[in-house]
Amino acid sequence: MKQFLLLFAFLITILPIYSQENLPSDYLSKEFHKGRREAFRALMPANSVAVVFSYPERVFSKDINYNYHANPDLYYLTGYKEPDAVLFIFKEAQANGETELFFVREKNASREMWTGRRLGIDGTKSKLGISTVHNGKDFKDFAIDFKKFDKIIYDKIPTDISTNKSGFDLFGLLESFKTKAGIATENEASLELFRTITNSLREIKTPEEMVLMRKTVKLSCIAHNEVMKAVGPDMSENEADGIHAYIHRRYGAEDEGYPPIVGAGANGCILHYGENNSTKIDNQLLLMDVGSEYHGYSADVTRTIPANGKFTAEQKIIYQLVFDAQEEVFKICKEGTPIQDLTKKSKEVIASGLIKLGIITDPNDVKIYYPHGCSHFLGLDVHDKGNYMGNLKENMILTVEPGIYIPANSKCDKKWWNIGVRIEDDILIKKDSYENLSAESPRKWDEIEKLAAQKSTFNEMKFPKI
Image 1 (cartoon, rainbow, N blue to C red):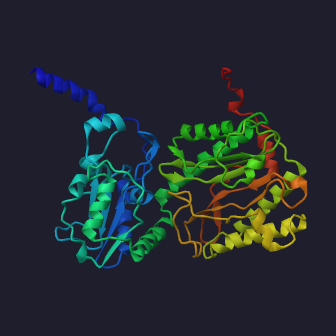
Image 2 (image 1 turned 90 degrees about the vertical axis):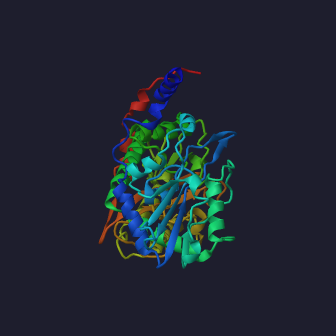
Image 3 (image 1 turned 30 degrees about the vertical axis):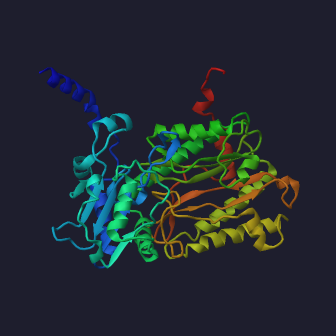
């Protein structure tokens, strides 16, 4: 009896592990993920099987991992957000009628107490609607004859992963798969087919995805606007970054979609500046490339603002040129436009403007001050999957982000040095037009100055000195 009571007491202490209250109610539905698997299957060739692994966990420091980020393809197809898993999708139903198999992490009360809840077999079936689910440890001895398939479709297999030597972590699952499938080296045709299918699916956003995309972009705009109001010469880059992060979390975003870029003055001329550690912005431009990640979907919004609330004459000229380039690109944002034309058009406008300003003399030199492309797909990855050599299609979402960056010691008049400007918006492509999803955050220089004149809640916050 005493042993029973001890067991009962232990179970009572771990019951919270198996349930969680007050979760968001707007995750993608299991019907959405099922529909994506069906769409994937429809694009597979006859007598083929697709294999999708989870992403590996990554070490942050010693025995501490980074917060886990799911493989966007696996999440797209299943909704599963845990490591050590593998999904199989069959083009045709197999002998026992199954069209898919999913191997997941086994439930483990002891490990869940330390590292968090696991869905396990039952949770995966009930919450994600996948009927044929097994524990990962069963895969090694599971009978799958890969030799009977004409094609095995898979993504690039990671090699830089650790193992717990259980045989059924991600490392073990990969080794078992390679042995079963007889894969010694990756097959480029299989990789290309996987990319083709996932690019074609993920470049077009469904109505369910659009709900999440609109939300993640909207709350990112709110964050940008709040920094516009709160910023001042004495603010640090890190503080501005922190305002973004707070507002993202305030509205339920789990993370940022990429490492935030918050660069003042010369730092704004570094395309992927990430330190964000300048202690004073001073009377410089502040370039903020920051977007939230909400339920896996990333925004990507950039605004460039004057820390003291007013653009200088030189800053305004460069800013207006970037704005004009973006406006010209917007005019061709509609179905049928070659995607490459967006960058081409933006470079034409900026090259012409820089020549008039005497900053360059040859249009080909535009790449010195505008070295990146104008657009990329947006969704589950900030640089989302899609067919970049194709044409724009209805319900694609892309960025439009021209920029000019003139670091110190550039071969032009000193008055332009350390001016870095990028304006980036998230655009939904329609049949004959576009919708700017990030229009809620002002882009025109005078509208930015008007918003900067307002006070922010963050201006009134007082903290102890240290």
